Amino acid sequence: MRIKLVLLSLLFFGTAKAQLQPFDAWIQECNLDSLKQQVKNLTGVDTVLINGIKQTIGSRYMDQPGNAKAASYLKAELERFGYTTNTQSFSALGQNIIAKKTGSLYPDKAFFLTAHYDAIAVPFSLAIGADDNASGCAAVLEMARILQDKTLPYTVYFAFFDEEEQGLIGSEAYAGSFDFQGTEVQAVLNLDMIANDRNNDRVMELHARPYGNSLELAEKIQKLNDSFDIGLTIEIRNPGTTASDHSSFWDQGVTAILFIEDAQDFNPYYHTRFDSIQYFNDSFFLQNTQLALASLGWFGGQADSRLSTETALDLKVKFFPNPTQGLVYMELPQNGSISVYDAQGKHVQTETVTEGNSPLNLHAYQAGLYFVVYTTESGQSSSKRLILQP
Ligand SMILES: [Zn+2]
Image (tube, rainbow, N blue to C red; front, side):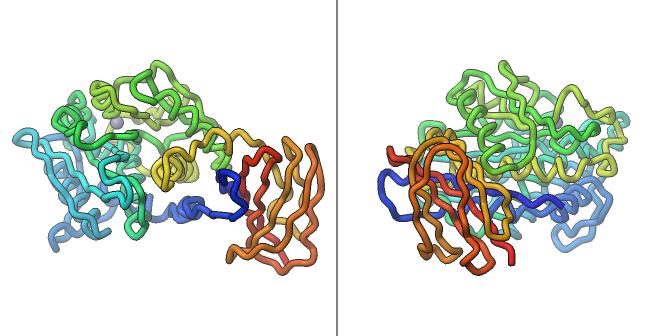
């Protein structure tokens, strides 16, 4: 078992008071069983309840019964999590399912979490599309589940697009009619094929192009993967592919990123009837979901967008081992100070530290969770979570 070292990176703007951001804990709430259950539900492995009736979602090809069932199911799931949904019908068969979680501070600034729910394979009646793209749908549902009881400063839209496989028809209809004047879209995180990693090298790709802040955002997400120790290897693709729904937002000049598995390790069952959950790399699937949630949490979860990631993420601080039984070695980029807080936020110790490697002795304290806040002489801070074992 691998135990995660979680970074809680913060900026303090010169104040000494620790403000611990909760969103690192969100990542721990991502649950592989719920993710996989959603894929099983969306691919017809298990039956689901839709409008009180037990049904099986089979092929999600645009004109197959499973496509409309999937739409109803996604809508019902969002409603089960407490959201009000909106269905955008853009043709006789095409419908996008959207839920909006209004921000507490910036209701007119929004993030999108998106995935297409339609699928394609020959024959059309067998298009179960587990990786493409029940995986992305499951991740968006999982984030909707986790965020249901959280207060977020920014508005978040959860969007499931139809007819992506027919040429991004659903997302183009949506982005083409969205009021970008009324709502300033900060970023679109589009998840499409996030569960295949046959060679188990944990490589995933972030696709960006110079629309909005897409390139900058991709680089920041790459850093988040390190800071939160998610364990993926991220390759940024610029110019990224236009072959998924994020491209419909690029067309509007909006910041948008595609999260997708490694093209060099391509899913051999892509667009075939064999694209099923049995070929998933479970932990890769979970890690991609965690990365998307960390991205939303970082960029959309903070009270002030001026809390740039730059400084905190560029402070390379290492503590090891973690968990520890008392003695921790710190690797610090500059002189500064270290303050230790317990899980309740109570200050337990502060000491000055010098650049390089130095030990931190926690033997005197009870086992449990601690937050170690490192502040440089110039006032930049970052914080890490430390687990002290008995
Ligand atoms: Zn797809």
